[in-house]
Image 1 (cartoon, helix red, strand yellow):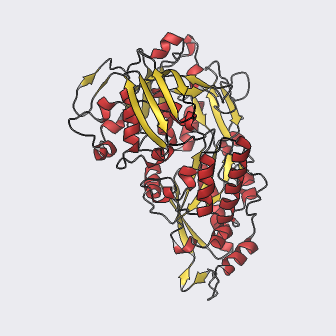
Image 2 (cartoon, rainbow, N blue to C red; image 1 turned 180 degrees about the vertical axis):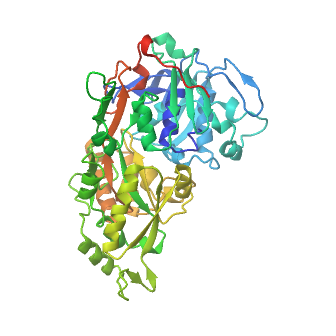
Length: 520
């Protein structure tokens, strides 16, 4: 549950419930930031130094340390907790490399008083406001609850403490019933109460249900209230009385997706060193067929690393259309031919076969990958699919123990490609450039993007990077699926915002329709 060392979207979502940041974007006007833990802020004339004044009377959630058994109550949040957050992330021995890349251009965080501190950037940076306002406090009394200097190894490996989340946000970590549920409860001492911003809903429970069909049954049985749907469910299983008719109690919501799926390759592997090979692999994905047969039309094909609906995505790039003949020609140019007529391409006595690692129990992945395997076989390429549990997949990817893998990225409002595509992140411990993409021209463009404040110029730079990545094909870019979900209609004040989706902190339920949280 320690998001700083677990780069997982679900855990990040739980932290959003439990902890607050300095400020957050306005739901309707995303260029505007609304204060949370910050009382006020100012920016120096040279746009490098932010001075933050904190709200007073903000308290950490009470908790009992699982190791020492000491109970902590009414501990105030201070500037030192933000300094601790920064120092932990920047410690080279913590497993925080994905987070650390965002803070690489911060020169220092200096505490002025208990409720004031400064964040000084080395240079002006186009995302400095977003990253600075995204600072969250980190509870020293949980993660450094011992004498002596901070121990990064303990932070990484402290299993008991890393099963908790201690925050200062609207919801408190209540309990985690392993393989059953994670329960949060509204924090009675939440500072937001003073501003009329305490959430109406008392409990939030995340139910752990492994199989997609069982999850859907739990939704229609009213055992759960909200579920992300896969396309097959959206099309074929939402015509029932639970969704349609006078007794319906479930509503479907579709919004543009803000993520993409991809196949990543180990570019250090001799199989994938030649970009013509990677171009050939991209040419063997019949995207039109997959969108029709797997996604039921509820996805869009992509060919680059930016959010498809953002201006940074270059819509003039055509990608690599499906063509077995083109793929065969590219493979032949790279020296891969079927020299012994066994139907498999070979080169220097080595057959072209590789294994892709993917998550188990994902119905979309389970239907998509066999289609790709089938088309690759037509070009003489042997693809083996290995399905593993999610933690195993993440471990393999982060430790670079793969030939190829299938994953996806959830995309922020404003993207900085540094973490995923800069060559420095290929060698960084636990960095997110998992595929070892290294391109000097791309590096130079990425570095320019980070200091470019002219939006039109930044768009041009991103388009150029998009073109380079499309040519190099370190990923086979796949799809941006539509965001599909179903909600129980007992929730009121459901508002959809183009960027944020449906904020849960503004929902409420009538008293006569409230439900009990399941017991252990």
